[in-house]
Image (tube, rainbow, N blue to C red; front, side, top):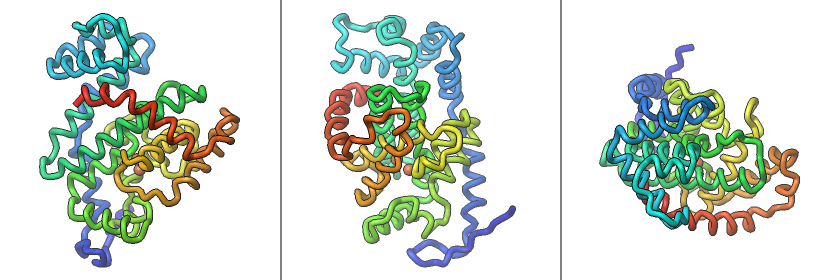
Length: 304
Ligand SMILES: [Fe+2]
Ligand SMILES: [Fe+2]
């Protein structure tokens, strides 16, 4: 179906722009870094050896420096200095190194984009990496069956916003104003202005990047995890982490209003796997997770 969106012109958006068509074309020209695709494959392939990932890291000196800085941060509490990638791999394990590597690659990818949008790109990075760390904490503490994918899924969940930040900066400014003035969430503001929410843009981007389908599903459904057909638990964990980060200030523009209802929707999805979550209050969980996240801040900053 060839849909041309003719915008009304209200809220300062230009009339007559075919945004869907533009977004489709942008998705065709925003390539996914091949090394990240390799890392994603490697992390979920049981046959991949640590030496392959070590070689991937060592092929990039800047990346090697970031991984070593993170591995030596107080968060990990390692007694000996970690001086080689191979040593870091032995101490932290393939999965943890894979996460650091993925986050570091995302960071350098975002930093290479339009410098005029640096403030928004930095905010997106902080939000993504905080949500990833918090999603991991939630999944581990409540032993949720996410198959170890919550970190990557949370890191990628808002990548649809990358397209908006890079290619629609004026529209972003209008969106931010609308969210503040009307106290509506970002998806609703996007529907009212550009008519395509970042969740849908994320789905298109994920398909273009040929990401595994569970990550695409999280990108599309993270604002309504109950609608996630194949991975509702993974999507609800990401959304819970997303809400926590938004609420304590590591967010990218969702108002606090409505957080508790969205949180309840997540606990309804997760309740059958973790009955204890049904009795957890939003603000208690937020306080606990914020404290836990603060212990990781130094390690996360070392990736920058
Ligand atoms: Fe989102
Ligand atoms: Fe988010």
